[in-house]
Image (cartoon, rainbow, N blue to C red):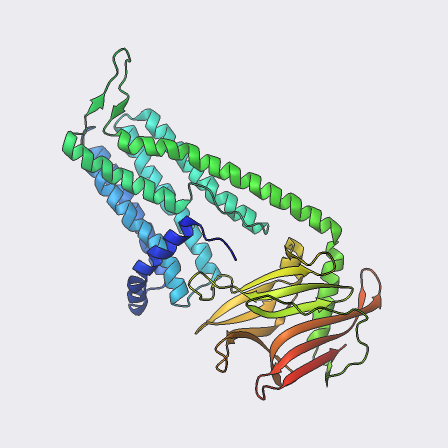
Length: 429
């Protein structure tokens, strides 16, 4: 069972509060991209407030900082709303994810533009330098994650992700404005013998930005180090199983599995594998498993549930090895296996249903949905005019060359969705 971080728990708590509002936005007809666009315009408004404050106020007037901070938090709310609108409204799309990422970068750059303009205009030159460094770090935190994930490496974590940056800037700006209205914007604290003050009212805003300048860049560097470790491990695993062999085995297997000329045979026990394959035990939410010669290592396709017991729409299926041929240990798929062989592409269809396609054969869909009989999720596949509630996929490989194995058949085991009777469909090449 995965450990849920405090940050994730807090995020889920916020979602519970904002979900009624999200449902209202969906009823109004707002799309996730529209919500993202609204967030961008609100951040432009933040920059306008900072610029206007730089031009119309003096150094000791911090009211504009406070109002800008309030709008920062309000705009930050829309960063969370767009994702929830997509999830609850079943409007998730790959372009929507790209659009959200691009506009988030624009929003943050525009925000820091306003902050730097304000600080330079009121002669906080050192603080403006740290604000610029914080902007660089913020961009690199996001870029490092995006680039790593483009290489197939999960790269999250760190102390200064976008939500933390938004909350830090927003709350500290509000506090700066409020305290400035109480004790005055020109309040300073000196230590005898030092030529400069050690604190002034504006420090409530500038000190956190200075800390952010360090923490964002540290987060980006740590992500880079973590990505390097993951890539080194990936290359080590790939060296054990050459790409050509892995892809050749799986592509040929699935091509034969779904060939239009394949002959279906029910419960055909000819040419069985010489290996005795184990049945996976103790997998709480197993959907189906895949086994193949030349060893008993098994790939598990498991339902991925969130903490609230609902299917994770971003990743409805977890995929991993049970290494029975070794010590029976659980092991993640390598990058090559996940991207070219055994991984799944998923698409939400609405009503808690998902379309699944093997990355190695995208022409034939599988469907993940809840059965009306047992109220549990199952994966269904249509083969030879029959709908099968899938339990096992077996690829029989016999002979052939190292690079071009001889796939004799692919066997689908499960239950006939119409008659509820056990069924075995063997597809021969």
